[in-house]
Length: 121
Image (cartoon, rainbow, N blue to C red; front, side, top):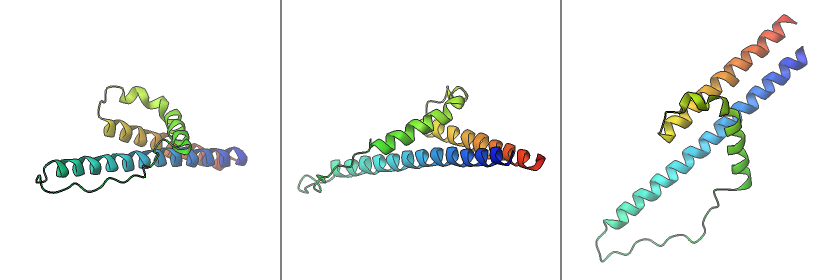
């Protein structure tokens, strides 16, 4: 049973790490979008004689293969909780609730189960 306990703890930590990384990437994207929106607002309200700052020509590719894999894994991990947040239309609230539920179930719940299995052996 010690091997089962170790596997459960490892799986629990990996699941929590994937969900946390996906949420962190979501936050980074949202912050970048907010910054770009604010810059556009400032540039639109600038006097007519001022030239807007040049846009960078090197565009980051946000949908990389690793990012897509992390988001798909996170979506799979949090899919059992989709029904709990079905009525939420705010993306921040939706992602935050899924993060909290996943951390509670996989982090606390599975971690607790792994500790209980280890104690009984």
